[in-house]
Image (tube, rainbow, N blue to C red; front, side, top):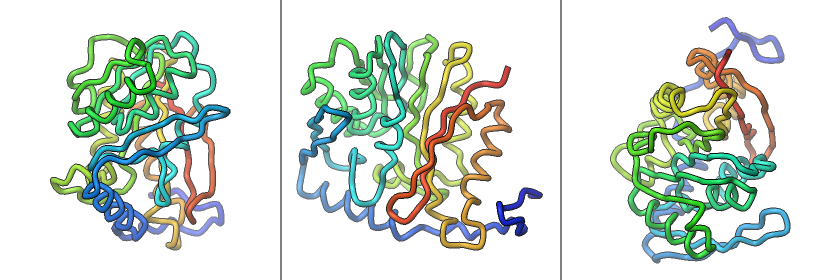
Length: 250
């Protein structure tokens, strides 16, 4: 690639490592899974949302990731919008979207435990009339409709996930899940609709090309016919996290 870092050094491709923070996160989820469901409270503005986390499900907050928080903190006012939540996990994004005014949320996950977890938390927070939860591999089982907003809770690390549902929530070798989502979302977005998701430089942060993870992802966004409409950066847990809002090029 011909792109260069801000320092004008030639871009170096880092090795596709399995970062320590992600390995520790996997161990954390496994340990929690063995102990059974547990409750966390998620503060959003002046609200505190109770969330029960089922075994193998990605928690809404932990000491190893801020991806969920990075997404829902940038929702803003969603009054009257039709929303899709891809990879619903614990259901936190759908719940925050509904509380932010969404007219309806279709939420799905490929992990049945996550589907059950999302349903439980939606009902516990009294939002079952606004949020419908079901099993789906990306858009496979979604209704034929278009959405104003697609929330994409995508795996961040470019590494082989294997068959573990825990790993599948964290690893996306070759960005294949990103590619499928970018391809398939085109028929599910209204004109000027937005996809929102988060990424972090978990693999490249400590290399000679710390922004490499973002450069590769942003090239993919462009290659699949999207433009970045907004980027929100934060430093957390020793890494850079970027929340992206993208829309189809017109």
